[in-house]
Length: 387
Ligand code: NZQ
Ligand code: ZN
Image (cartoon, rainbow, N blue to C red; front, side, top):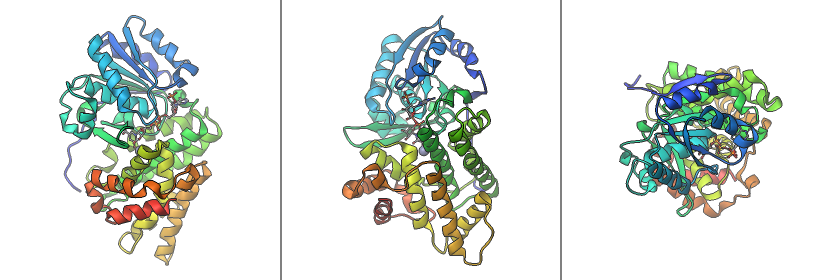
């Protein structure tokens, strides 16, 4: 195992009614609150009213309308409000996009220049307002990690902002808040969690502990996502998906591993940047193609091991055939929960492939250290294979 230092400073309240903790957690920090949320989902579900009632003795300002694939324009507007009203604490209520936008607001509120500077150079984050989150969609793990992903429509860029100062101070995780998540977003969320694991599991240097954790989370998502899609109010399924989401992306699954270049995310963020698609849908499409491309004599045993541990496959003497079956099963799972398996289905053609591949490689110089090292031409080919 490689050496590591690890700390997740986020306090989690998990379970039914965990929003009850909101008042005390907010007041422990301060009274001036910026409430950040997305479209109308929290109003439709009644959560907005609940939050406002819980914080009736606070001074609340609002940054509403955060977009899926949150824009830097929303970050700028939120940061401006924080500065203007001398906000004590930012409260994000929503899915990963809302949480990500709120994280970037927390950092931009303490920065004198433009918010996009922080995205381009994460080391410029030297201070951030405290963040409390109420999660409504299980997918990204933003509730338990230090990352935000922000889009800039002017430049067709979607880039991560990662800094330890961006861990939420507190996250309230009530699986019942995800009962209203539609089937397509539930499926996309499942694909996102699985992809977070794949990025850590299909790497050149892993260890037995991280492998076991990753395999357990994958089996859990594969078991629970179809249940949550069939019955949106299945508390057991929703709760396991919610905790899987939190665990899949905060780094603890892969402690001690070697370098993990996250190639699928590097590629998907480009597709999202150009076409504004749902992140988990893009990942579900790219994943099997990336896997097939990565399969060779050096990686075949990894895919066979995955097939056995995650899908319960039996060993086969033809290792390539077995590895391919494991990849096919991954694709079949995604299509079984209603996700597409090609970019053409989203109306995407080859027009921007060169530009997307160039950006992916430029922003992620470690792609050459993937399990099968990826060059610019490789990335282009995987995009083409995914059409
Ligand atoms: O905007 P509202 O009205 O709230 O509707 C949202 C949105 O339309 C809706 N929704 C959320 N909770 C709901 C609900 N609808 C009904 N009931 C509920 N309880 O779902 C739609 C999608 O929401 P969004 O927040 O965009 O989805 P998700 O959580 O998948 O977040 C995706 C974003 O996170 C980034 C992605 O790139 C993408 O921009 N990621 C963030 C990561 C991180 N912070 O660590 C890592 C990920 O890999 C990912 O890149
Ligand atoms: Zn993701």
